[in-house]
Amino acid sequence: MDFNALFDDDRAVSPVIGVILMVAITVILAAVIGSFVLGLGNSVQQTAPNANFQFDFDSGTDTAVATHTGGDSIPANQLEVVAGNTTTTWGSDPVTAGVSSGDVDTSGADTVRVIWSSENNETSQTLAEESTP
Image 1 (spheres, rainbow, N blue to C red):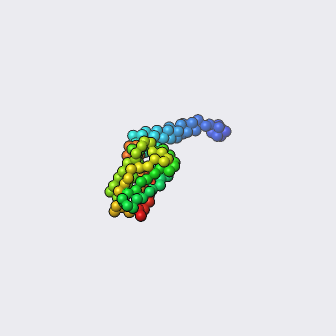
Image 2 (cartoon, rainbow, N blue to C red):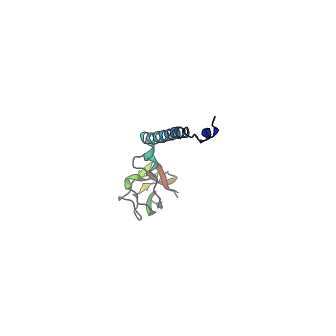
Image 3 (spheres, rainbow, N blue to C red):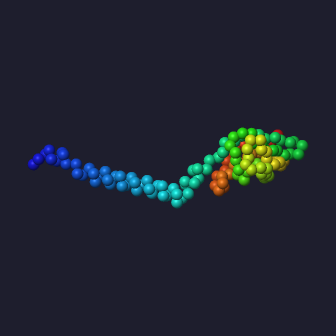
């Protein structure tokens, strides 16, 4: 019996590596297709914009106005100013630095918030918040 021939025989290595690669490719394809089918790929791309806001309060009329002071430009239909149960929208589109919201009634509210919602309204985030005087 030739023992050197046993150590030099590497025919079984290729089929094992081939099977491992096929399993790995199948798992990766299943993960990619599953993420598209479940819609996970779309929600990953929707991140909140980076923007700064300043609030101006009028104690005589119990109202507040939010002003975009810097950062990303945001479509007006994705922003709202909320105080308690009262909501107001923005005057111009897009909302850029220097653009102010309409007056929001702050009577009975503890805080005023600028809330951003994604295009498909799947996610939302508070971009700015301040306590009422």
